[in-house]
Length: 215
Image: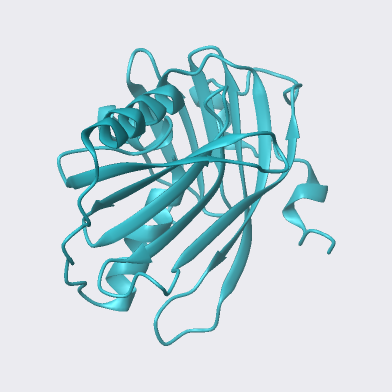
């Protein structure tokens, strides 16, 4: 992710502390396969634009639905949500995050780690590969990560594109806090220098992808 992790960080704060449950044992080859898929999301050099729709369920609040989008060209990546814009050099591990909430811009390798593919750091206790599955975007590898009070599950294409994700608290794995699915994937990118720091001043997401998807 990318911005999915920022959304869940907020969700954890608002929902109260989570108690980490023991992750189930996984075979060593499943762990190795999962790590390979995670690496694929961070090293992809594909050119793509994906537009997604997310449902966020916070404790004690009505569900929130919103759009998000990600763009990639070679080593360069861009993420947008209604609250955030991020540009990153995924090879150089540099990034800038612009908050539309308070107008501040922050930069650093930690932002690149979150924006470029599946976020993975020392807080992750275990990962597992859950096999290959069909999807509207072709066959995907499904991986799951346990750590920081969350269980995160991702579907990843052969090209390393995350096309869906589900986050749940470790103490209540059956209750998803966030569900994201891709509603459109395109090979062409919006026009302009969309990966520059200056481009954070404007959104590049077409208006039609900021509206709820048709059933």
